[in-house]
Image (tube, rainbow, N blue to C red; front, side, top):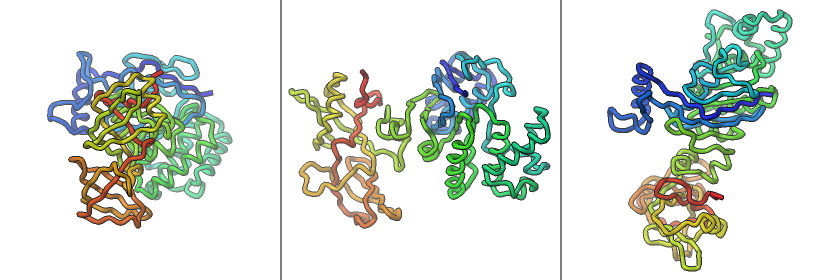
Length: 397
């Protein structure tokens, strides 16, 4: 068993640590110089992670995802014991871990920069944590050989890290972690130093790996593709606060707020200024740039159940859900600014309603720079966000 629970976990950097954190976050976020662009600062210091609540099941693969400076790595390091917890409680298998030394938590961590010993061979790197635990030589050999076989690095055991590619070094770093047979395996952006092709290969390797070992995984990344493909559930963070927790499909289909809607999905969701109208019979529709669009009955049921009234809203539609208007009378019109051929599809950057939106069409869909285009939205693909940025279609009951 390896259940991990974080209850109201908060991390505050005080004094000099706070000044260092503020400088880092100013660099990571766009905003007015001298401001922390959304990072919360109190009399205690900079709040890096605030009221973090998460229950991770045994052998679950959880991914913490968000932009640089959102607190995801800090949260991971608190689980590892590399950062102290200011407030809240960390439990592993029901046992409090706040004051337990990292070496006694039965966890292993894979870092972004591999952190291999350059003077040691691959075998020696993988043996090192086991020798520290004074395990018998035959058991060390068995574990190292087994891990090497799982990761496909048996032929590199006698080489030193400098003779390996980036992907091979990362496999060694993962191997050094799994030979310990930890209850919890932590990964802090392990693929960010690899090129696109290697990242794709290593993602597949990690998916295979989790089926072969019994550890619980907590994985940190800023890459939403990694989050969507690897996680059983993903935790979207912003400014140290959890924005949404759910399966990749749940978060994609039902984003909790504007931030999640804009962060998850490539290309990002299009947003239009609009208005939600409630009719006398209790029905709902939205208007964008004076054009009315109907909503699916399911969405209308949720709005009725939530007691939603007419109001100004932000209408969100993903690029793949915008369709040509055809013969429909209700449509928006725009001008194609850029047409990008992406192999099987074409991405059209369209100027419409006073802003730019992206429309995905089949590669043979046509459309060139300067052409006019008419488009509309399907009733069941429209997302509606209130003035506070929250999704009005999520059932509150």
